[in-house]
Image 1 (cartoon, rainbow, N blue to C red):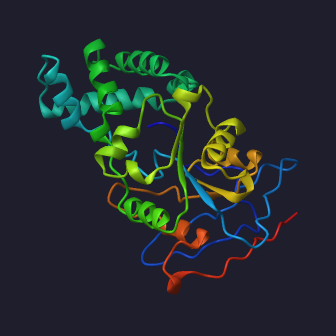
Image 2 (image 1 turned 180 degrees about the horizontal axis):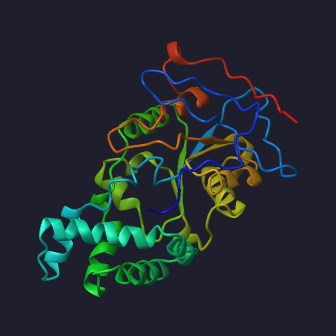
Length: 287
């Protein structure tokens, strides 16, 4: 709900390193994003694996496809004094999502993650404009989006974060979000596995601006070329290339109960089990 659309884009061109999927993990789209012709090239890691990892939140570590559900909207409306029948809650969910995900809705959401106040104003206004909705429904919808317990980590996220911590690889979460997402990590028991948080609503800068990635690298104490950005949006997460970072893009296909393919990060950082760790080779620059 906070950023990615999971669509193909102008990143990950020919010659990118393709880590093969193992143990049922989806094959990733490759760890190096490229700007269009004329943009900066991928950084060369000179044969050494990354020393730190930056992760996106929504659609990368936590599922973004199951946050808005009829039963959750009904519960939030009931708490505000308006019970909803299940079929009515389902109708309202569909109507509101159709509005916020429409081309006009996406246009109006631009910049909404720069502050909590702006996020609330934009999202509730959009939700209230949906057929059959009103201000109460809009407030309930916004509460569903921002509730800490509404976001679920992908099945492979806890294990990967734990393995990185065990290997001594520092982790930052870099997210375009209009609210404090630390609560979702705490609810899932993952907050202590994150070393730095760089959130657009606190920094006042959104991805793909290079500043947000540089801020995260500074917080971890590593230069950009020694960190790896992991995300699902070729444009927003791929913007890390302009800050000197290699980028690993996850597959667009995802679901709440499916591994996200995050095991590839352990292979790329050398933090995985020795028997599953390939030799690191710096990718060949093409073009």
